[in-house]
Image 1: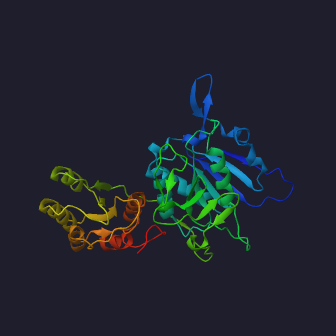
Image 2: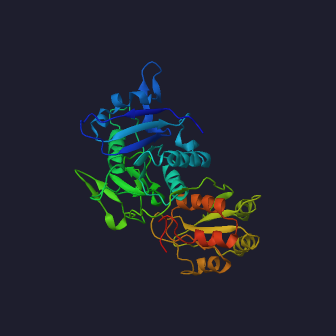
Image 3: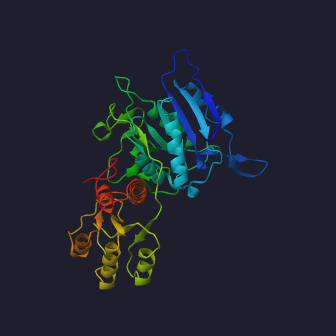
Length: 358
């Protein structure tokens, strides 16, 4: 097991600490500061976290910071690190009340989706956050995102139970279900949206929870961590003018198990005979195809139009209103824990962690 370096911060209040949170730093824009000598942005030392975010010392709960041995840009995120993060949560699950993961924004929705599958029967908050501007920049959004994510992670109801018990993304005043989120903006503070599921909470002068949509605390369920993801999957995105060569080159990848087919509108694709034959033959030889809309909002309704009826007839799995990020990570998870093709199809077509509606 990796020996991670931890930094503990106790509240300055003389009152007993109101809970504990483990903050896991993976890398990304948030943890960068301007180095005058080098004239560039460099990762900052988390030993200096109080200096950079003095508000942390005024919070009324214990905070422990843990950094990956080699923090990365989120563009280099991969399934091995997703499993590592899941194992960190597992190893520290009984020691801490909640978890906050500091993560680069580019692949945050993929990581949140993957963790939602790996952490089965989660009953504590796991909140991902980050920033569009480094913490060392005057106008950075990092401080507000981190402070509020910490407060959300430690929030309890009148029975002393955590209000949030799932994997979420907090960004720019919005707490979103992790596997319903997408990065929509590259240069705006309002970077993440959840078009098909309402925000779980909105942070203004006070934090308002959208309780009908928040996963309820379920104490009788046994927390379980999965550690296998199968990456023999791919995206195939439809576009006008797509050629047989492009489609065949993806569908015929050696040892490929599944394809997320990004279709038009409510699940529509070309009805050219060459495309229909390619899809049909791929399914006949055991490839699983998962139909996801290119639209950010709405859902796949196979069979509503003639252009999607064939997909339904040959056995393409409808992804309903799932995001592409949640779909591809769900495939990795399902193929990692199940070998029976029919069971994989059933799992893909039904919600496992609130990632889709049926």
